[in-house]
Length: 119
Image 1 (cartoon, helix red, strand yellow):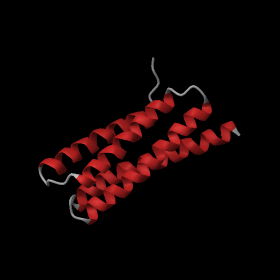
Image 2 (cartoon, helix red, strand yellow):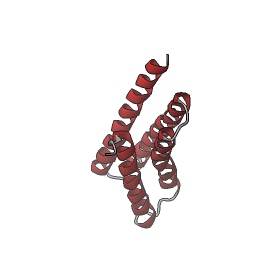
Image 3 (spheres, helix red, strand yellow):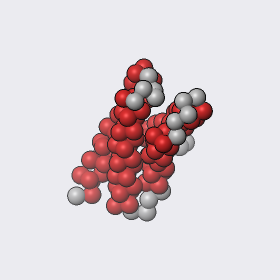
Image 4 (cartoon, one colour):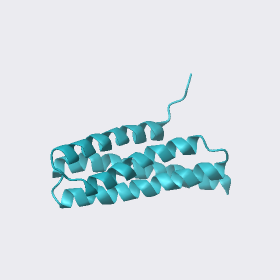
């Protein structure tokens, strides 16, 4: 039986939310610049987690997760900009931002643990 990978599941689910938000922003709000940025960084988190899992070494694993963490930080930035420019309402922002923050905490914890295991 395959073991669940929480960060992989959460980053994939988050990417789906980001894609839906992008579709809404581009179709309904006609916003293309910020939404494209958050689409790129928000979907990149899961892609880098996926690459980390397939890494050949512990160093490769940690490196890809560090990139995923940076992408999550960038996504957090774009989300705040979308909220502060009223492209997304405060309620929608709180929901997706909470998920982004959860990913940041999870990734940070995994990176920190992997550093102590390789040291």
